[in-house]
Amino acid sequence: MNYHGIIINVSLKDKSLLKSLEIIGQKKAFLNWLFLNKVSVRPESIDSIIQNLQFNLVEQFWFYIPHFYCHFYRDDELIVVFKKKLFSIKTDPATWQEVIAYDKSLGISTKQLDFRPCHFEDETF
Image (cartoon, rainbow, N blue to C red; front, side, top):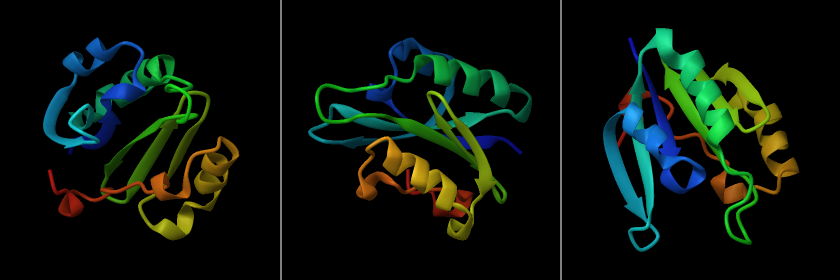
């Protein structure tokens, strides 16, 4: 079973990385300039995809978004990818405390500290 993940277009320095991924859904936000891309990644490719994403994640977007992250999930596994840190946790929110503390240390808004969808059945796009 493949991983599914969410990657925001403006979170990447090199947006051509998205062309190398299988995009299985897309949701537009903020006046249609921000795209949430739902991707599918084979298990044997997840490590190299994560490494490429970490290299390409922007550290600051304009003046007000300090950091980005992306996440991947399958079954009860959740992988949260930051530029300089990686967390392998469960999809159960009770296991997210360390990741949320790290998010907050980076200045990420509490409203953005949500790793949903994190189950296939929660997907809406």
